[in-house]
Amino acid sequence: MSIEIRKVTAHIGAQVSGVDIAKPLDEETSTALREALNVHKVLVFDDVNLDDAGQQAFVRHFGDLTTAHPTVPAVDGSPNVLPVDSERGRAANHWHTDVTFVLNPPQASTLRSLVLPPYGGETLITSSAAAYRQLPEPLRQLADTLWAEHTNDYDYAVPEETVDEAQAAARAQFTSIKYRTVHPVVRVHPLTGERGLFIGGFAQRIVGLSPGESRKILDLLQSYVTRPENILRHRWSENQLVLFDNRITQHYAVDNYDGRPRRLHRVTVAGDIPVGIDGKESYSIEGDAAHYTSVAA
Image 1 (tube, rainbow, N blue to C red):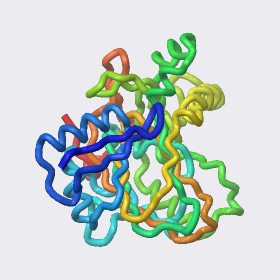
Image 2 (image 1 turned 90 degrees about the vertical axis):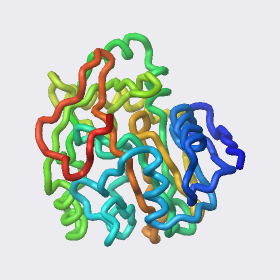
Image 3 (image 1 turned 90 degrees about the horizontal axis):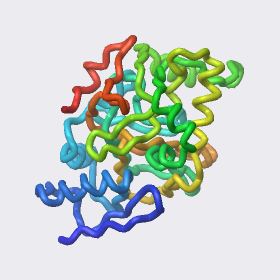
Image 4 (image 1 turned 30 degrees about the horizontal axis):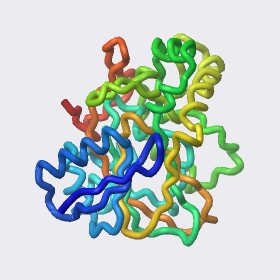
């Protein structure tokens, strides 16, 4: 079978056809998909015939699996599969890179569609490499020097009176182990050498600055990440799988489906420790994620 990779936007995303990812992949095919992921950041596969076991088997072509999440329960009987379920809350409707509050966040994530609402429920994925390239030179020079603290325990700015018992319980579960990790604001991709803005929702403070100063700078940098031209707006259909490079993207689940059922399953690949442009690695302040992920070489 001949793989066809069709670019879908200028900065991010490609549609892949000509490969059955439900079957074991030979090394040539695996290499072609890894190279395509490096180039396009997001790969979309249609009409996949996968269950949870098949999704995990496919993802293993890219590295060791993490467990589902450091604090959130997995799918019953599948410790590596996280249910992304509207009935369990819609906390992903903010821009983020997956699990950046641990020392070595996943290198790649996959989402597979199971139950879709009749409208809405898109996933936005953006290129943080394109965002970095678009920074004016003075901002780029500043960003190159900055480090940011990422945490899963922060003020979500949600009024208390709007949080019901289920939401409060979900938040308590999410923060049951508190993590604080410092990452470079500009991360160097370990395979391509590209630089990308490594920030997003879990980045809460710039090292050496006050919370107020940090928020102004993070919001300014984030405004380049979320430029419309850098975003792939993925409209889900049945039996789709989306693979994205978690090291150099952010994503956002759009809550525009009136609370209708929406369920995806997520499987992620263990990642390396981020490195800044000066060659220094991220470091942990609080929280051990050894139960969640190995460290990729």
